[in-house]
Amino acid sequence: MNASAENFDSSAVGDRVRREIDRAIQRNIKGLEFLTAPRQPVGAMASDLLIRRGTMALYRYRPVSDEVYRVPLLIVTPPSNKGYIFDLASGQSFMEFMLQRGYDIYLLDWMPPRTDEAKLALEDYLLDFIPASIERIGEETGEREVTLGGYCMGGTLAVMYAALGEQNRIANLLCFTTPIDFRHMRLFRVWADREHFDVDRLVATLGNIPPELVLGAFDLMRPANRTAGVINLWANMWNDDFVKSYRMFDRWSAETLPMPGGYFRQIVKHLLWDNALVEGQMEIGGRPVDLRAITAPILSIVAEHDHVVAREAAAPLLSLTGSNDCEEILTKGGHVSVVAGPSAVRRLWPSIDAWLGRRSI
Image 1: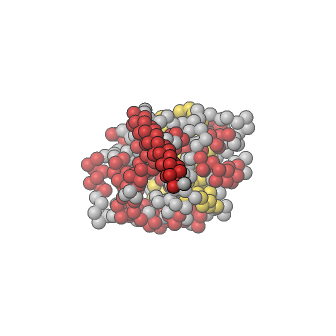
Image 2: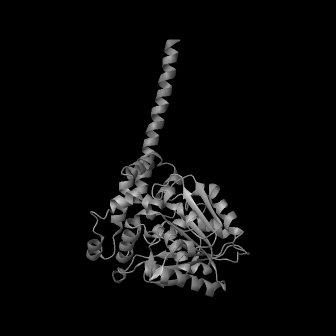
Image 3: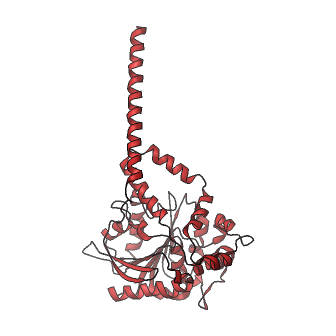
């Protein structure tokens, strides 16, 4: 009896050891494949370049539906990041999801600024790049109005453009994790504290601000995040879907863009230091940036576990504008999961479609 139990236990242990060895070998093989593989391809949907001017690039995504909503959708990406986060891969693409539901989509994206573009400022984004895009969309579609959307600082640019009194060209405002009240961007404020952060010297010395500087601020927020991510990757190395998603997000993060020094200086001084947008002290080209001037319907999407833009930072968008049609969607997940990933397809994007569809006819 005891001998039989011992034989049984030995056999079970042996099987488990063999499984763990096979698992370790498979993990190492996959690890070598990961290290030697080329960059993960991104982009699921076809698009056409309409404008390319220095750092600015305007794309139109090719419709896939026979019937298209009347009001076009223009999405502004943050100047520090590439816009393909909205279109990583089939099944994880916001662009794919919305195109299949009949939206006419345009993307205002950015290239690394040239050396001679280091002096680009908010005036260039708000009085040139965005209105030039809206004008071109009007030429393409014959429509005067657009739904203006933006992600993170791209959303802030969209809000500031609307707050210049340009809402007569804006049918709706769609904001993904968009900071408005910079008092609640606490770690960034500490990182760029005016007592020790000499932004004028930094810009004068470097011109364009290298991405490593901004990535360092994100690392300060979550010092163990990179290590935890690598450990999680290692634990899931045999899961091809997990590895594919990891590589796509890792590529997007690694391709963080330099920022024009003039733009960066204004963000630090006017927003992080003075919180001028909420305080009503912001001016662009001599014109007031007044949140009360925004009367278009507003949808604000915030993430419950967003460690970059806290809900408190985005909340004033709903209370300080002149719009009487405002809605907030609080979703699970983090800063990136609202614009990319399979979970957003199920949880978030159908709600965006439901809200925007009846306002785009």
